[in-house]
Length: 65
Image (cartoon, rainbow, N blue to C red):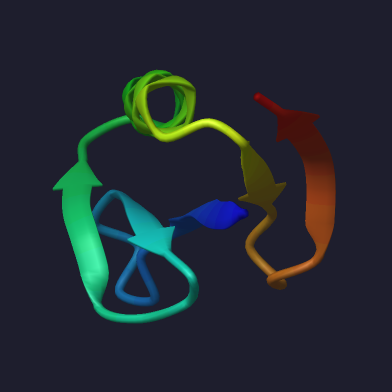
């Protein structure tokens, strides 16, 4: 199962989408854009999980596809 995470960039310049906590896939300007992109990747690579993290890297929401 693939695991995608959406988290704020540490420099607070955008939002990162990562696959399996490795190097970021891509950076997005807004949280909404990053979530949409992660959900699309997860749907294309089902079964997958999208974890949405807050600024303290705590899981705020989890979605399964």
